[in-house]
Structure formats: structure tokens, C-alpha cells
Image (cartoon, one colour):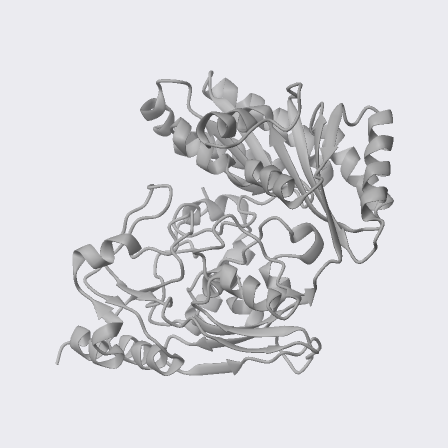
Length: 468
């Protein structure tokens, strides 16, 4: 009996496909940079089935790639070498919610929006928010240590995971699905799998941390002269609101122009264009947050940090303001070719980094159109550039050279070349340029210990090349 026949028997007729038309949507990533191929798509419905699949794969040396909602941006979720593709989307049950302990237990295939709604249904909050929340999954969010808009207040996905259920490469199940805030009973094994991109084990369920829903949320939009003003305004707002800032997003005028040009139904919130903007969200239990926020913005305007601004007066305005931020990537895509960087630097270094790195890219490729935006509150910028008009192919041909220019400057500022998207295939061979030999050796030792036959997402995350 062939390996594929055995694997198909594990999941039954509804749990696999060999039809290229059925499989095709699972093989191409959103930006179109990577496209995979596989002879077999498996869609298990239970942890027992995942365990049986991995037992067979380990026994036969059959490689497979775990996949959540296929929203990754670095090629980590695709079978680029013809591996079996393991989709967790059928494992989509909410196993339980503890309202007193404020925890939620979800299977890996539950969408982020589904987890958010399950928490909201019991008047609690799961705070992770991403533009792809309708399709990305909890398992994928954990495997990539997702970030998003509210990291400033609630932390990365790593901070929201209390327990995990993980199937190891040989099929054994690690039963770590606890809901404990405190557990000092040895190595914190669950954290090894957070951000591991499916290279060490397959996450099948998670216990997640919930929070009280804020009694009041205030959203404001402010025009600022430059990134230095954004950093100074961040400090002022944190102090004046008592640490209630939950989101702080930097938006360039070019990003605003792309949204207005390509996203129907959007409009400029302010009358006079500004070179930069910040989208501000303050949330908490205090009933006077609107007064505190307005007073802080008024003080900032007096200091010259803000040139204009508004506070949303209703939920429709809130949605309009957030839509500007959340559709910048879509606007960039519709405008044409772009080269993107998901980087982080210390918050105080943002102005100097933007100035130096922008100048360096423009020197390397004159006419490139900078579109740096993102989570200024935690130092994570999507440091992107659109091609000069009519020069898409020429610009994309310089992808590797431009990335090296940017990433080398990131290193100068003690930053990271991947803040929240992960490493996948795109950045795997860059790691030796930016991480120490000791760190890379430790990563390889973990991979060897947990997956000695290299069957889990091979060729992703862990570099094999020497230092560049």
C-alpha cells in the first residue's frame, strides 16, 4: 500500500483532495510571489488524525507542510518542493470558554475573527487584530507569532498563549493545553512552538488569554509634520492617558493617496494634506477617556507635534479611519509592483532609521516611491517602496539588492529584519547575515531534536547556508 493511500485512509473521503483545481487556492500566496505544488492535500478533522498522519510521515520519511488560512507573506505556508500539504481548516471548533478565568480554548483552524466573536459573545475581548482576521487561523497566528494593531497594549501572539496541544514529528501528542497564568514546572515547552512556523510540530489547539472589553474606546486621527513628532506624541499620549493607548499607527501621505485612489468609498478625513499622520486608539474602563484624549491632542497641537486632527464621533467614523490604515497594503497592490520590508527598530530610532534607509533606497533606485507605515507604537514598520511609474519589472528585479540595503541599516539600528511576518522561505538565507553563529546553531539543534528526519516544513525558517 502506498504512503498516499495510507494517508488518505486516515482522513477519509472528505479529508483529502488530489484534484489540482481543488488544491490550487491553497498553493498561491496573497502577494503572488510564491506558488507551491503538491500531489496531495490532507484536511484532518481531529488531533488523532493529525497524529496518525505524522506517524506515517515519520515512518516513511514523507515531508509535509502545515497550513492555516494561507495568509502568510514569506512563503512559509506553501509546499514549494512538492510536499504533502496539511490544512488545519477543518479543525475549527471552540472547545470551551472560561469566563471567570478569562480564557478560550480553540482548535487550530478557528479563524481569528471566529475567536474574536466567541470572546465577544461572552462580553470579553481577544485583542489580536489583523487585516486578514476573516481568513487567518489561530494555529497560523501562533506558528508565526502574529502581531497586528494592538501589540502596543496586549503584546504579540506569544503573550496571549497560555497552553498548546501540539503533535510532534513522530506523531506523539504534547498535552500542554493548560489555562494557567503561572506555571514554573520546568521548561516552558509551548513557547518553543510559537513562531516556529510549523518546523518543530503541528499545533492543533490552543488555550488563549482573554481580557475585559473596554468600557470606552476613543479613536483619533492626527496630521503630524514628521516621524520625530510621532515619537514625541506617543510619549505624550501614554503619559496623559495613563497608559491606555491600545493602537498607534503611522501613515504617510503617499499611503493615504493610494487608499483614496484605489479603495472605493474612502475619503480624506482632514481638509489640508499633511506629509504624515497617526491613527490613535485609546481604550479602557475610565469614562473620561474622550476628555483625556482631547486634552492630550490639544497639548500636542500647542507643542507643534500636531497640525490638525479629529476625534471620531461615532462607530461609522471609527470604521472609516481604521479602513484607511487597513487598506494601505491593498492600495499598494493595486498601484503596481512594490518591495516590502517587515522590520522593527527601537521606537526612538524610527525617525533616524526612516531618514537614512529611505535615502539609501532612493540612491540605489532613483524614483522609487516610499510608503513606510505601520505600528509605530512598538517600532514595527512596513517599510515599503512602490516602483516608479511604468518600471515595475525593472524594480522587482532589484528585490534582493534593495532588501539588503534596508536590512543592513536595520542591523545598524539594532533592529529585526522580521517583526511579525516570520522568516519562511523569503528571509531564511538572510538570517546568517543578521544572527550570530551561536543563535543559528541553537536553532539547528532544536530542529534536529524535534524533527530529526526533517519532514516538517523542510526548507523554511532554519538556514543551511553560511554567513553572507
